[in-house]
Length: 156
Image (cartoon, rainbow, N blue to C red; front, side):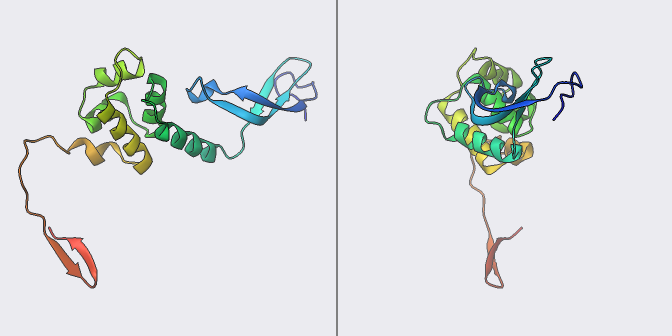
């Protein structure tokens, strides 16, 4: 394989353990990953097969860790949800400034918000799934269920 940067060097392939900050997590390490390096110009390429599977694995690891989330982990999970700070704040019932403070480690995320964010990620909820929830004073509402051909459904 020829180097695309200098168009002349023959790439040397090795297996290495590398930090992977491009995912937004400074503590993330890829073990035994293929690295292609050009001895002529120094260009290197880390080969990441099955990227989507890797991202799911990493997301699950972050969401299941026992310690409270760090700012960079909160940002990583927000991006995995494909949400802006405004959208995440609306879904969690806080303003975007609070989300920003969490992500910059200016203010630690509270345990309830931490758990909610993890649940949102693991359940793949969209910004609109939770934004309307718990915005009014408590009240009891009638919930109707109907048996339709052997399946219970909520009745309008």
